[in-house]
Image 1 (cartoon, rainbow, N blue to C red):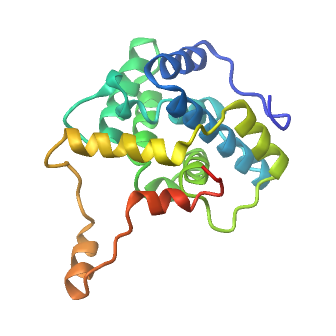
Image 2: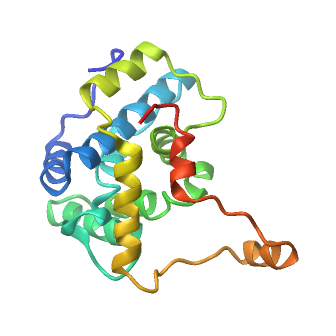
Length: 207
């Protein structure tokens, strides 16, 4: 329990956490757990009711695509989403609910979750806070410190950039897709695209 918030303790939530723990290194596991708690802290700050189990499943499983458990030819968020959905359905979770988890995970590297339901939106806010920061966000420093104490960052910025780079290096050419309007903007005046380490340094943490 953090800040009087209790994480879901259903069988499927425990199994999902066990999968994330077994598939991930310490750095990645701590990251996905911090993302869950930051999402819950944002929900509490807003006074918004969320589906905590859905948020937990989506956040805890959202980076399976960066592990050997879900390695494949597609970009990591797609591979991870597919692995999460299969895992959930195989354990009796309804197709509809498992698809909601797929959607949250598959969309998490874009901005679409910010415009979906409250659970998806606040899940995304928790992820963003841990990876690159959220402009104007001011969570209680004591709550943030407790999350980081339980799930240390372990030089996350450097290590996460290495994981992303590994995904790119293993898939040549990398199966990404530029937004159609980004193509227009780039050809009008070449866009400056900052590298991932710069984005990771935006997060409100030293490492």
